[in-house]
Length: 117
Length: 113
Image 1 (cartoon, each protein chain N blue to C red):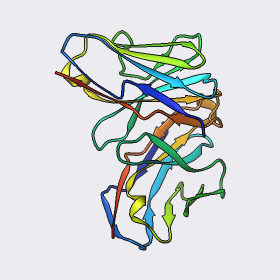
Image 2 (image 1 turned 90 degrees about the horizontal axis):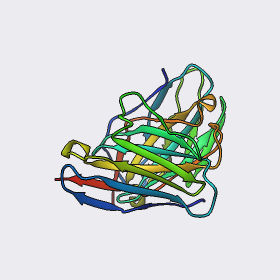
Image 3 (image 1 turned 180 degrees about the horizontal axis):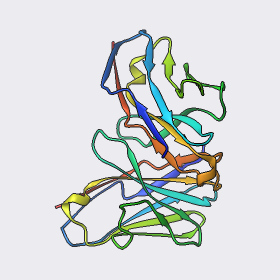
Image 4 (image 1 turned 180 degrees about the vertical axis):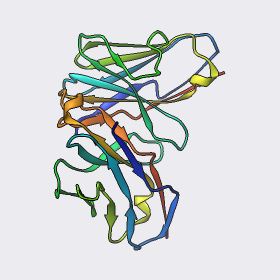
């Protein structure tokens, strides 16, 4: 299957700083990328959907000014957590798809664990 | 709105036991249904899928049948192995909503030798 990488795999930062997480599709062009958040022993919650070259579409309740998403190329999307606080500590997972319909499979990255002190 | 409900875990089984993880869904349209597996320390992997009613998805000995009449997509395996220990997520995707996946809460499976 297609491979999606995330970097870094884990990050610890101080409260008030910003953290950037990268999501790359290594062997296919990702028209659409998704960003999820997963709390311990809970499900994945979709944060936003980004299509290459367009502004991201955020789910209800997700602050777009706090979670900045950029999808500048067909192989790279970034999530920047601005002015991070301890409550932003979580496991962030991206996925990538080569299409925009529900028939296109999503391929998931391994996730990034963010800890905000 | 669309939603997915799956049985709570953790589920603990002995090796070679029969596995069933229940999953039911609510959807306004005709969704595609998926099971994903997350092994410890790894990302989600697609285990199997079904895109229309009565379809059966299967992979690695796991099976699930898309039952529209009962809005269910239960995951089954006849004989589990220790290596099947993982968290299993049921999910749906409405093809007309840009491929967004809606996940159930996940069921942790632990298989003992």
